[in-house]
Length: 492
Ligand code: AMP
Image (tube, rainbow, N blue to C red; front, side, top):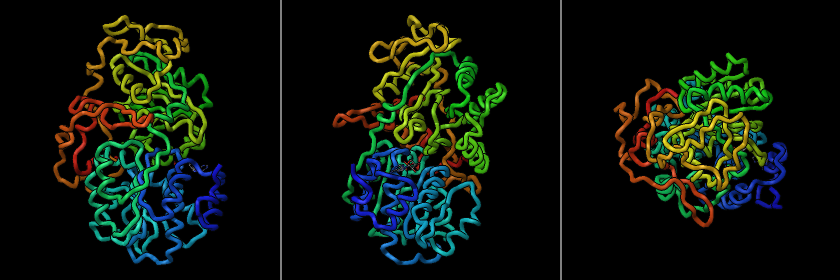
């Protein structure tokens, strides 16, 4: 097994690694670190949980400490862009632990936090700036941050930044960063726009792949319970009550739905909290802290709010609503089974979510185990096999090969009432004044909406890569309808 010592890291960095308790490099660290130390650009297909922060962070810190120059006032020597405040915080925390033995300064610039404190942080100049794109542009406009001096650029969770409407912001920022520079781009999936972005901003990159999009799913026991929408809260409560010691992350599609569900769980006597776009930064940080420490055992979250959160002890992920985009499912269940452990992912599927379930199974290539929950009713136009009311926990075969697919007999083409235009959360940060850069305020009709639909999944070299577009373009559930070139103005 390769050791960190073999990767070309300096003694000082090796000490930091030992202090962190990392014994051996993760696959992406093994692949990425030597090339990054050589100064190569890098394109990493990897999700959170693979050790990618250290994969780019350790060589970055080493290279910055080799070049002993000091940052000029208000400027940075390296820039890391991340989609959400939570992820930016997590990255900054990791980097602070890597620079402990150095004089280097790490600063963070994210929406929803005091501009004035950030200006003060930036004033003296920083070695590494971790930022969400919108707030960074605010600082650049008001000349409180200068990124033209940066010699290193990291785009983390690029696909998520794309989803949140940051593509223009990314292009603008990437053009401002100084050249020559070393650029690293990480993405869990590789939609066409990210490929295009990488062709524009990376020079002859090394490509590394930690785990293909579907593979987290292989370490997670996945099951689905067929239940009517109205019965979901009661079924979930019963499941959560079976073992209140579990640390369970529950995904709701909307902020409103998350809050309603939280009230139900609290009324049932469970210890629970929530994070979503209507919560203040302070509330979100408190919720994550309470969940991480185990003080509360259930965290109800929306996709955007939970993106990238690294909480090692999560044993169960519940999909109270199935996600509109199949790739989100892979991200959701990746919150459990961290660091090689196994985990449980349990989905509650209402009759009108059957086609979403099929998209997910096509993407992961792993049929979910069918379990029926109480309250299930024969359903739809088919024989209703998916909705037979059986005792909770009764297993109905392992779903591999013999599981009924498309039980409602609609062939997956119908868009049920549940799949009207999804209510999306805003981007991973708030913006002063709540305006948007384009000044349009319109959410629909982006040029992207007319893009041809891509297939849900594609096999390349025997491995599964994920495409972002799992719904036909222009379909009611198509996330791309809500995308527009600029940044959204919502107050997430
Ligand atoms: P990341 O994918 O960067 O979010 O990292 C996921 C988790 O793995 C974090 O909690 C890291 O502290 C941890 N981690 C990263 N590299 C290693 C390693 N080589 N050995 C053990 N844990 C690691």
